[in-house]
Image 1 (spheres, one colour):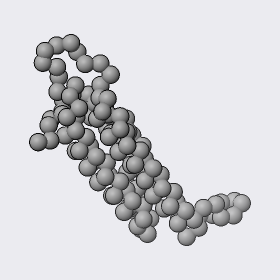
Image 2 (cartoon, one colour):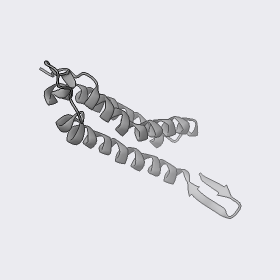
Image 3 (cartoon, one colour):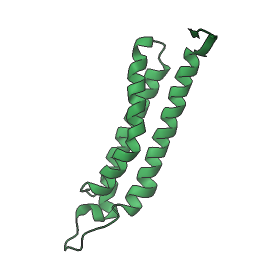
Image 4 (cartoon, helix red, strand yellow):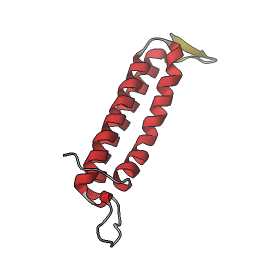
Length: 122
């Protein structure tokens, strides 16, 4: 199906689906990379000088939060791609909402992994 404008066809539904899937993939991969290459190794910028330090000051404890955050991003990505790839036009607003959530995911996931109290995996 082609969306028509005054000057003729602008973009097809297939292009919209492809753009949604590609953008969702880029942001999901970028968010997961941010979690594991920035939030887990570095964590918060400053840890208070108290004894014992907060749980988020230990990289091992940030890993538990990172695993959960990665799983949430993957579920969001898979559902967004499924909705975007669907041929039902009624599902497209949900795919766009999932994409907007994926656009916010890098900020929320970094703050969650770096600053929330973590827990050890084992």
